Length: 228
Image 1: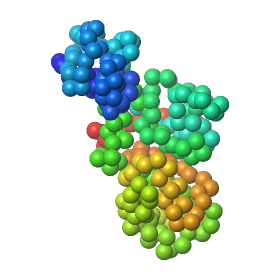
Image 2: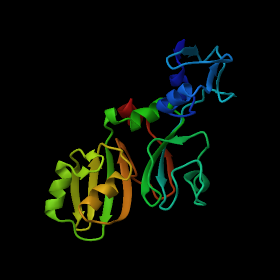
Image 3: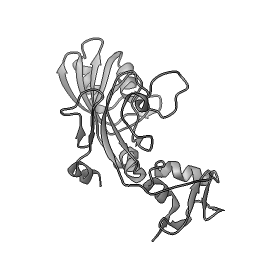
């Protein structure tokens, strides 16, 4: 059955569908030796599809929940001399992360070789909720909690209303539906707080329950069904 080539590339675990579209636009994707354009289709069972001359192979799908340790890069490449999640955890190179965590942040990462699934998790239109525990340098004022609930004006736009739970005066549980870079730190920074520790504890129904730093588990069928 023919499908759009970017969907086949994503299903093969090469990258997300959006990244596959970029590669097609760059002219590095071929079908049966011919460079294709965005929108072209192919049959993964019959046609030879290559990216930068390398043939892609559709793989069995894997879905993992990982507890990323602090001070580890969420990256495959590293020019900074720092350890990456692939250096310190038992993760296959063909698995990629759906949503980053900052170097000094810790907590839940979802890794997969299913690009369509990764796109579903990370694309803003699907509004997958992300929950964090935020440890601050001073007690959080009630007025600032209300501001978080209504949205914070940042340089790239106002954040959407957040769900906020006060665990103790210096610990907030924050649930948002956005994935902008450094968004949690920027939200609290705008209010005058320094984030001392940041842990992502959930993405949709997937949580860190029962996990410790460095742990890896398979995402359950029930959790997958929520996303799909």
